[in-house]
Amino acid sequence: MSAPPQAAPAPAGYGRVLAVPEFRAVFAAHVLSMLGVIVSEIALSVLVYDLTRSPLLSALTFALGFLPYAVGGTLLAPVADRFPARRVLVTCDLVCAGCVAVMTAPGAGIGPLLALRCALAVVAPVFSGTRMATLADVLGDGELFVLGRSLLRIVAQSTLLVGYGLGGLLLTAVSPRHALLITVGTFLASAGLLRCGTRHRPARTRRRTDTPPGLRPLLADRRVRVLLLLFWIPAGFSVVPEALAAPYADELGSGSAGLGLLMCALPVGTVAGELFAGARLAPVARERVALPLLCLTLLPYLGFALRPGLAVSLLLLLLSGAGSAYTLGLDQWFVRAVPQELRGRAMTVLSAGLMTVQGVGMAMAGVSAQVAGVRTAVAVAGAAGVLCCCGLAAAARATESRDGADRHMTGR
Image 1: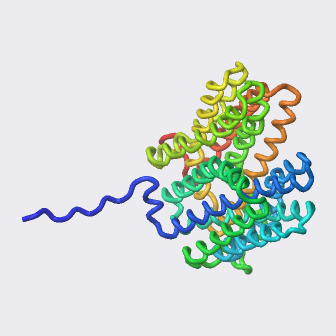
Image 2: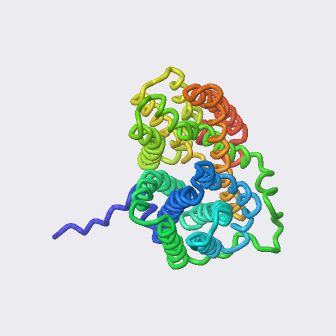
Image 3: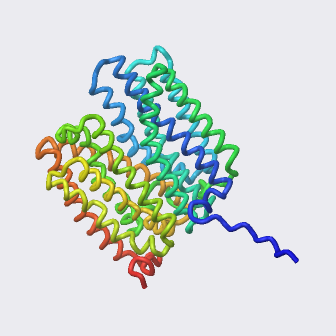
């Protein structure tokens, strides 16, 4: 008698997340929207420079991708909970497609182009926050949510590595305005995937509800405030080497090849760290190592005070990027600490704060390097970052009983 057929083994790690059909639609839409954003940033920067021959205005198009996040995240955060998530996501994609479509008009001047760039940045935190809150609906608020959010971050880092190269190649074949038309297509395709690939869910909060409007009910919780800072503050320090990559490569005499390697090292380390933590560590282990990793992730920046060469500099950046795997533990604490009816605005505020803090960090890096030099600026960022992270870790431990995280933070 033949043996009974064996059931197919359940997928492990990230495979469990990709086995969920709704998540696959969200994942594909995320890839398309990320590519759209990256290509639009490159094409718009080149278009503005072609029209003005001004490096300042060309650089300003990138800066405008950071600064309006604070406005969108503050004023529009409640939208993520007041309306059905699928409607919000599709509407954001359509608004982005419409803004980019107007950019392609031959008569669009510098003022309208920069204003439309601001509009994209205002909408972006609402979209990303609503999408992250939707992950908890699609995957639950446990292990799968953490892996799903990690996978989207990995895709974002990988898309940055690939997207800027592809965008540059694209502009050798087509004009900036034609490249923007491709971006319109990616946003529309993302909207179609979200509309057809995810199911309708009612709004998390109704207009007539006991939940106060705005951000007060979210920020009134000390645990939530501490967790937001745990996401934001390290990110503000971690961008310093990327912001100073060009002058640092010039100091090293490594040319454009060295610049490319310096720009890639931190994202490569981040992807490697997240992949290892997501695939190899159990949920309890991820939460247990979160705070130690938080305190150590910026420590390699201190090595820049020793004036390392290119190879050692790349190793330091890879190590620092790998330490960012602490975010997997933070993800679980955050979704556990935020009430379901506030998740949309919480994720929107989280996303807006991350982009705003990174923009401020880049600006401060430039000021610091102008005064003290590039290597000193990176080392000082590492020292200040480690001190801030240790203080935040202590604050997190003080609030750990808020959601039972003490079982994981302290290993009890």
